[in-house]
Length: 504
Image (cartoon, rainbow, N blue to C red; front, side, top):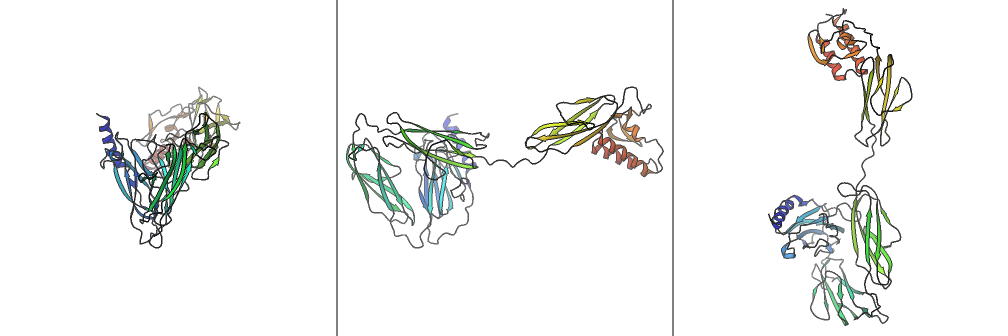
């Protein structure tokens, strides 16, 4: 079967499973607000979305998510468009998770209708290995009156410069547009009066000489800004000039869960290399906060999803491209406050074998201890034997890994030396039988040569039926305490006694 056919079948199935549209929170939307359309696209690259919006207006919105051959995906690479509903600092009222690939039932193009509220939204791809596909966009309130004000658009030029102000090798033009009314719809630029093209990322100009870059923006109400421009000169670098930006890197350290999340604090260590003028500074930005100069590893301990941006500048003023790493710290489980469950049982008469068992569904059993006849508690490692004649009491307890200690249990039994038989004519039937009724309970040896049937003594004289039943209750309660019977077995025997005619 071809890879493309597998991807086609897988994509169709997953697209059906992962399209989740949670109802948006009810938010007042101005009556004039028209339905807007926001479009995301992707191709075969797993490091970024091919295109994505940067702003929007509050209100009902059609989301278009296309990962198709039309957008440049010719290998069937699947991607998701997932809205963040956990990270602090972002709106969490839209739960959107759409898987798309060129071979799914929609040929990679999906739409959904949501309601956006003022604030900032974060989106990302959830497929492992695509962790750098992430971004955010800002939603503003619609105006109280029709928007007639054009956007504000500015341009800046960056790059290494010589003493006369010319840019060495490359000049990078960054265009920013804002609109407090209906929101920015499109941004365009042109170099040296050539032709207008859509602006999607900073523009690098490398052609030597004088240049003028013009730019303009249009908002969602159709208002177009005045044309702005920046002028600059690009010159060839001298042999000894550093025009190469440093290369930043990050290392994340912490304990991971099986699902890939971190179980506790994460330590982020940043570094950078520069073979020319050397690294001057490294900066980072955590969860949309302010840029901060990096001086020591950054420790993040708050539960939830986090996004860490970082960049480096060398001594020649070259700034690296902004990098990003995101990770999730799992919410810690509730503390264990339940002590372990511990039981004990005995076997034998002339030498008694004592077995203690403990379990704990929370943090797990740490230690089990026991004490014999009022002695000190000792650590229990394996079943032990008691051979001293007489009646003995074993106390036992268990402690879990969270420090919870069980209540102390007791087990009583009697060691009878060989040759001592208190019931020489013992009833050795296999099960406990009362007045001809087989209870199904094993007729165990209780010590001193007596079985359960011997202690019940159904053939003894009893003044009344009730007296016989009380006698059976006393015997079985003692055998439960000694660990010879379970509570259920004792109940079975007592009910059989109650139904019998003994003592009537």
